[in-house]
Every structure is written in C-alpha cells, then in structure tokens.
Length: 155
Picture 1: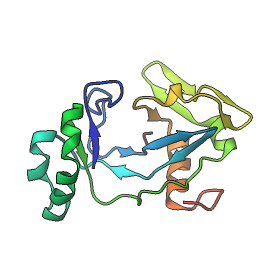
Picture 2: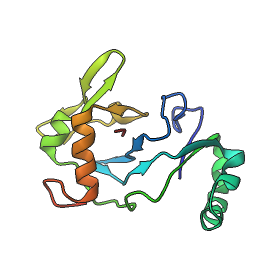
Picture 3: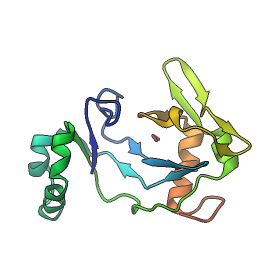
C-alpha cells in the first residue's frame, strides 16, 4: 500500500496520472544520496474510506495500524500485489543519478541538483514523476538486486 492525498507533502497519485499497471518506486534522499525503498505495481487506486474492503484480511489489519494517517489528509490508497521488499539501503549509484531522466508532456529532463554523482538538493524529487523508459529499467534492476552495485516506471 502507498498513500496519497491533496497536499504537496502527500501528493495525489490520481492527479499525477498514475494508472493500474504502473510501477511505483518510492525514494528517500539522505545527505547526498538517493535511496530506492522498493517497488509496487499498482493494481488499483481506491479512496481511503474503501481501502479496507479492497484488501485481503491480512492486509486490512495492517491498514488499521495506519489509521492515524487519515488525520493527515490521506484520501487515496494504491494497492498492489506484494512488490519488492521495503529496504533502506539501496543507494542509486552516482553514475545512474547523473543520467536519471523523467518524462512528461513537455519532454524529458534530467534530475536536477546532481553534481559529481551526488545529490546536492532534493527539491526536484518532491512529488510524483514518471521515469523515462531507460531510467525505469535501471531502477528496476537496482531494486531487484541485479543492478551494478549488487544491492538490492515511476519514482
């Protein structure tokens, strides 16, 4: 499960154009590194109020643990089959960071604020962005553990 809402601190997946079948890669920036936390293939996007009925019983119990999020303006839940396990040690290598590319209706753009393979500022990571096909394939390899570092289509 991943949660979305109407605010910049918890952006809406629906507004970003996320559809069932899309693959989501949550990320975390820490110091000068970018970490890929896992992957989720979207099966459905449901309103928070309906999430319990859309989940298997085992996952519904987990949703109850996240109930305090409702007070934080959660309005939507991405649900998918089990994805890559949640990890906090999968660093995006500097060379990949330098060529990480997003795509939109306006064209493609590189990740901003990257110098010498290091993330200087994380402002260009705030939100939901669609990765270009090549970048998505490399991030997917990294998450699965077949990437160049040996550590295991959206960010």
